Length: 317
Image (cartoon, rainbow, N blue to C red; front, top):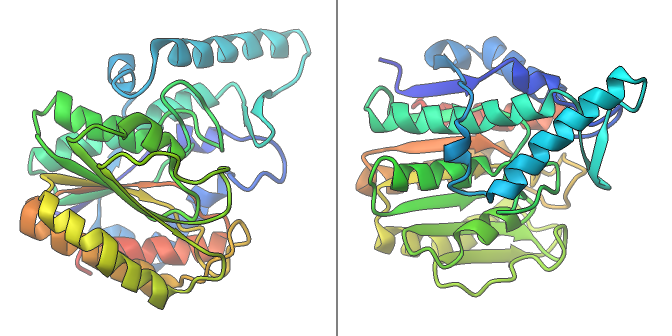
């Protein structure tokens, strides 16, 4: 049995937001090429992501939000048939094409299927190579390249459908996971720990003082050594005290020093170290159970190298 699953789907390549947009299908190609060339891919249990049931998406999102995205897709299809535009704008940075709905269902479906497989003992942990990403998607709002909050959906699914009592969400994207915070704040069944560049997008950073959130804002140009110290000081004691039964990771790699989307200074070895720290907590309290979902990371080479480092640790390679 391969201890680490790899969940993805070709539909995740079809969503795109226009020429030159940083959140592009080539991100997945870069990851897959790197895992193939390095041999890491051969050590993984490859699974095709199913379509997420709407009822499970609605564990984290309001019914009107889901219906609005579906309606926007149907309307766009009709406009294209009439010779209209190929994209519908949601905010200045975020738009849909006719494939976005399907890609979003597969992205959430990957997180759910990975949760099922890990909890069934078919694999110890899993990485979901998915797009669109999710951690800016609020309960009732799409924003910041995100439509459905894949990690929040999976965390609530583990609680509601599998009967777990405590899960943790770890977010190491350069941007604050405001959508995840919006969905899980105050829910004591979920502990969310994160660091993020601040001040930065989204405006305000963390806006909640809920006791189940451990948000660590850091200034631009913060490097790996400082981040490691903050994790050991702020994250690890809370995670150890909380004893999560499963850990979900919002795995954004845009805090890498080569990534122009942020101004932080992490490198591959930092992502490996962070993953090892999370894995140590999971071994002690969660039977090793981790589901990691791709979020940001826009320099294709840095993204591919960082995902390789992350997955190597997950798979004990």
